[in-house]
Length: 215
Image 1 (cartoon, rainbow, N blue to C red):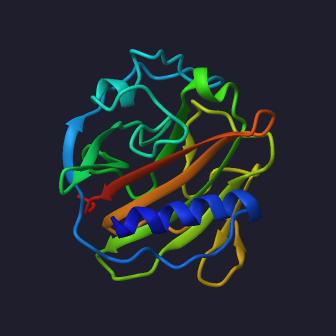
Image 2: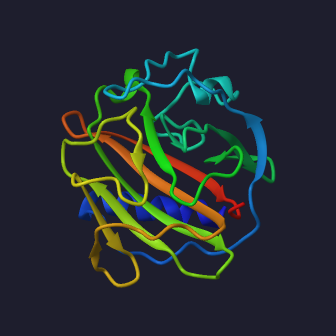
């Protein structure tokens, strides 16, 4: 599972140094969709959803309770354009990533939910956003980091321009940019770390999604 291990190193490197640059993951065959994850009631804009041990995407997908140390049992989940995902597996092995159901638009939103019993009130988020495969063969890789203590789980943010409380860094040039251009059709990934700095608790979340051709 080469692709996920590369993603994990990127995310936890970002946690230490801020939104930085990195090379895209190695290309490989796409993961096979396994169990379908739930579609929880949308959270209020100002606070994360109140997931329980029995009612959360990881448990309902048959993975067991969320665990901060087990990548196959995520304690955070990234929704894209309001869409939940399906957990995946490869060669019978459970993977961390969600594959978001259905195509999304070229300027999607994202929302991060955390498992409060483990994370408490996490207010920091960093991620690598990158193309896995795009129709124009462009290399897209950005580091996105919320300013310390400003991130709100459960809130919808525009992925390509999340606002003044975020720093976006081009992973190819190292330059800080204000926004990312609309996405070409293709497959993309968000690999993020949701953190509660007051407790040191941190959860990895990985979502794949597809941008469709405009109609």
